[in-house]
Length: 493
Ligand code: NAD
Image 1 (cartoon, rainbow, N blue to C red):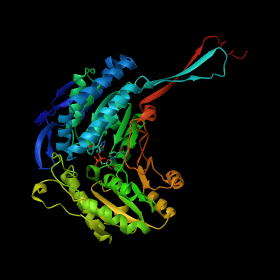
Image 2 (image 1 turned 30 degrees about the vertical axis):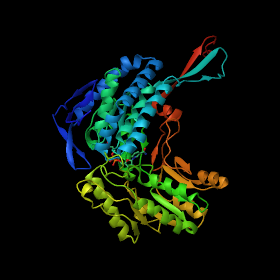
Image 3 (image 1 turned 180 degrees about the vertical axis):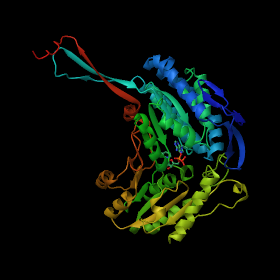
Image 4 (image 1 turned 135 degrees about the horizontal axis):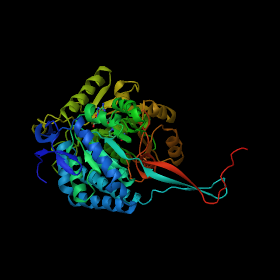
């Protein structure tokens, strides 16, 4: 695919303009140029998408066997793979995420998730309950919920389509997905591919538009049976309130401030390498980024020296260049926000060990770039240690013993991902149990797998994605009682 000029909304199997005719621009974060215009959905368009999703649920998609649902998801996975290179380039261009990483992570995971949940479609099953009554068979059915509204952010827009849509469809639901304003293109591309795969019209609808308009409508609409939201804590709270209208049970994937603890017995080479990825992959725009390095004081000098050498060597530039390791941030607003945290750090008395500016090279002059930034912050109560920056900006703090490390690791409102590095097996299990987080990585960071539960504790969210766990989110249980040889209870004489 070449550059997209104008794209419509994807409703009921067709690309259509918005009812109002409104469009919004999509920027290339490397050049600050508009390279696409996308129809902007309003409430009428969202209503049309919900109606289409309902008709598909009551109609062709709902009528399919699990096996046939799985086949469609597998077919979509194949098409995404076949057209993967152009999709990856589009994603890199729209998000600023380096092409090399989009290929090896976002694209691979998008295909993997559709494949995994294609298989899941035929594994969703109920139970036979050991009944207390003679002559009665009691069994459960796991049924789809209906129309699922899905609202996603801009940091991994392609991957989030797969993470949301694949399990919802595998369970037999239909979907209305609202991409983030900055990054609607890859979701529209996947919708086109779904159409090519023959997935019935209305099963997947994609409505780019404002969160406060169409996102809010999806959250409160009585015709939407489930709302899945990935984004900030602030909006997550609004989603809970709006979803009370018809008691949708929200699935919320919210922010994080992941601790990454380097114990004194860590394999330093592995810890440096893994921490670099944890901190700066996708310019640090990741909810599960390891954005708080906590380092044992006895290895402080050695670790900081090696880590800063690696940070200094990071190649910053055009995300479409094969050798680029760090691209621009996805939006100008976000660049401003991240640079603002450099001032916050200085104001709090933290020390900028590396970065903290725009790169200042001719190649990056027009884009939304920020240097990889490392901030020494000895007081874990500082705002830079507590608030999610969501950029190539991490703090580093020394600690004296295991208890201090655990207290610091847990001492934030978030509880999404957490990780640490040690060679001591006993410590590994002990600390893993003590960390308050939905995912804990030992001698690794940011591992995700479609089979492994993903989600947050504390303010990082509610519910779990992936694996069998997520099927609880996307289905409801019905208990069926068959009295095949049961004497109905007598009415008291
Ligand atoms: P955001 O909350 O501003 O926006 C997320 C989505 O919600 C966008 O599509 C937006 O248009 C929509 N939205 C905005 N206001 C809305 C409203 N009132 N009602 C309904 N929808 C609305 O978040 P963001 O800045 O796009 O994304 C960054 C945040 O997402 C970070 O906090 C990050 O940690 C979090 N995130 C979490 C996960 C996870 O899996 N836990 C993954 C990625 C990102």
